[in-house]
Image 1 (cartoon, rainbow, N blue to C red):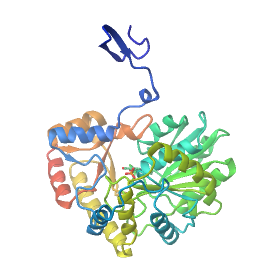
Image 2 (cartoon, rainbow, N blue to C red):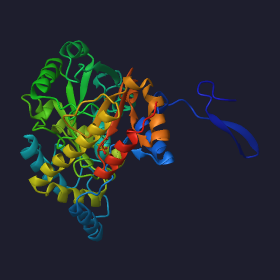
Image 3 (cartoon, protein in one colour):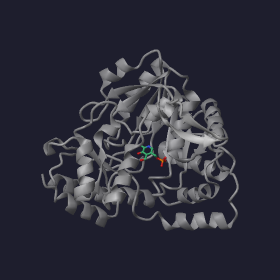
Image 4 (cartoon, rainbow, N blue to C red):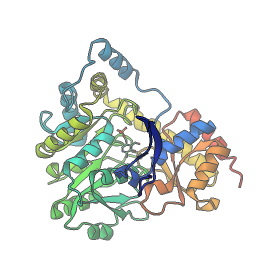
Length: 401
Ligand SMILES: Cc1ncc(COP(=O)(O)O)c(C=O)c1O
């Protein structure tokens, strides 16, 4: 008999009997596969340039490669302590103090995780009770929807203003007695918005008034343009103990495959995050944690160089997109351009497929960043070599419709 609800399953034979093995409904049924990863597959199948998934096609700093090789040669090959190697937590505490202006005790307030992806999931599982509301400003990085569903939270999507700033009225209305947390991403993927101190202070006040926690995804903190400054929510008055700051080595050091990130939070929250993290993963890769200590040793000039490189790449892609007929703005931070495709007369998914299959450039359909809407948008990343971007722009110049 087929499973009445899902109908998913297969006929199997065992012990002389043929039976139907039903796959029972699960929480995973409530969300779809990542559209970004799906677009990467489409790019590979069509030999298209992948401007969909945000990862570099250039090398990470050579110091990091050497440090990773050394760590393996020097036998850092067994489990690290579950919440992260001591020298990495110490180095993170020092870095966060000088760059972000925040004090965190490496013994009790820092958890090293398997990328910021795990840091976000572990944080939500640590603080959410099923039925709690979590505010998600929209558009949003697509993982936050499934993160909310997995943790049992009820996501409350709140549209950003037309310029992707905070819509104060909408935000005020969204905070309710059930609000447990808000997830804020600055610099923002996909919009490129860098939230100002004033905008963050407005949200901080709401969190303090309504006893909510801010979970801030700051993984693009070093990729900001035109003299802007990244501000950490946790550095604002009254926010140290009610903010979980999430960071990662993926984007700052071009090592998205290493899967090393971290969560910073006061001791009571951290002790919960650490328990969840332990049972989910045991720990982040031990040799790569050692290599991340070397990353934190890079001079200040590294970070300025990174922002300058991305500034150049942002302009190459922006000019190419404009020439090809896309409506877009230069992003303030991160490494994406969120375009308006209304002028092309096709919806996002159809247009993304057309671009990957016929033009040879993959992008992400805008609707994957919205609970509802976004069909008039496509997101392109410029985390690629200059020559990759130049070739992508040449191909985009051939859109024929
Ligand atoms: C906003 C945002 N958060 C998290 C991630 C995932 O980062 P990590 O590699 O640290 O898991 C990404 C990746 O693109 C991202 O854009």
